[in-house]
Image (cartoon, rainbow, N blue to C red):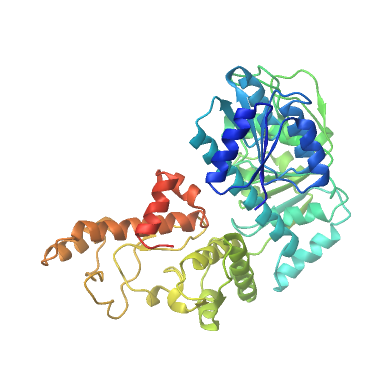
Amino acid sequence: MKPIWIVDDDQSIRFVLEKALLREQLPSRSFTNARDVIAALEEDKAPQVLVSDIRMPGGSGLDLLDKVKAKYPGLPVIIMTAYSDLDSAVSAFQGGAFEYLPKPFDLSKAVELIRRAVEESQREEVADEALTEAPEMLGQAPAMQDVFRAIGRLSQSNVTVMITGESGSGKELVARALHKHSPRANGPFVAINTAAIPKDLLESELFGHERGAFTGAQTMRRGRFEQADGGTLFLDEIGDMPFDLQTRLLRVLSDGHFYRVGGHSAVKTNVRVIAATHQNLEQRVKEGVFREDLFHRLNVIRLRLPALRERREDIPMLTRHFLQQSARQLGVEPKRISEAALAWIGQFAFPGNVRQLENMCHWLTVMAPAQVIEPKDLPPEVAVTELPLTSPVLAAPSAEPAVLVQASMEVAAPPTGPDAPAVHPAFDGGWEQGLEAEARTLLSTDRSDVWDTLTARFESRLIQAALAATRGRRIDAAQKLGIGRNTITRKIQELDLE
């Protein structure tokens, strides 16, 4: 791993952080001023994480942040600041800081923050590697070849494009491909999901705001239209945009001018807009919830993405690709999949489309017991009759992360032995009733470890589900479960989940 760079003119701060990182087996390198850091960046590779004070001789930490982000936009930078510098720290977020660390700081919290930054940096490296090595899009089906041809025809155009298709079908991938092969390829690609942002914040996200425009607006902030100037702005789920904001969007598309929230001067922007939706916009127009003039402004070129069930011949290729990709992200050996298992997968409807297949491959990478995936290893929704009931079981993600569900009961005898789970008659009360039935069965014996047995099985499933949902990232899994990093590490060891 690359070292963590510490920049501070205070020797005691550098010493304390160096020793703490050494105990955590994290390499480090220290600097007394920003000037030396900039010189080192010219000579050496970028660090894993940069931790910098704000006020130092030879240049401030905020100036250093600007220069580092210009050269290494994916590098996490932690800004250290005294309490009186809190306003500067807030400004640092606008410059792309990963987090700020107020002084005096708790050493364990500082190390934990640096660890989170290291994990973020490693995820960025994996993502960059995947983007470099993997093709933009995969598909041999005729429907996908039509999409590829359309992207080719639009490669030298700046025309507005509307991408339609079901959720999870890859609309953002198409938008990125349109940007990459356009005259604006050297400009920024900025994406925003209009359905994921609360209505009260969406206007500020799109158009920015002036300082003091509303409570909490301590600094001027550029919106997505300004950030995408000279490039492409991808408006995902445009059908869910609030009606009053549609009027403002229409104005920008018409003449390229807009006002920041609380602003009085028009801002000019040069942006190509690509919109996407899974909804029927013509129907939304008839219902009066989407402006007809905006619809015609966006619907210059329409590109429809096929659902995965319409291109089943691509499923084997996509499955192998996602298994390789998941293995790279988790740092494990890629798993192979048998033809029998592929046949099962190929029969599934995939309501979550390509995203669901990708999530399934992440689940298989974590949960499949052998190096070759067989039909019995597939998640319940794909191969229902292949899986036994063992009380609550871990199911694979559909279009969303993993959840606990009850699997089918249509199988032969369960495992035997003192710790083997019992099989009960069908029930409709969910996993809680299954747990109660399991407990009753064990309590009817002469066992005296029922609490420990069921608790261990429950914790094991819960931790495995959290790890599957976070793609193996322990800190993220611990946060989702509401427990500490040390707790989840200890439980993994106690439950033999390594």
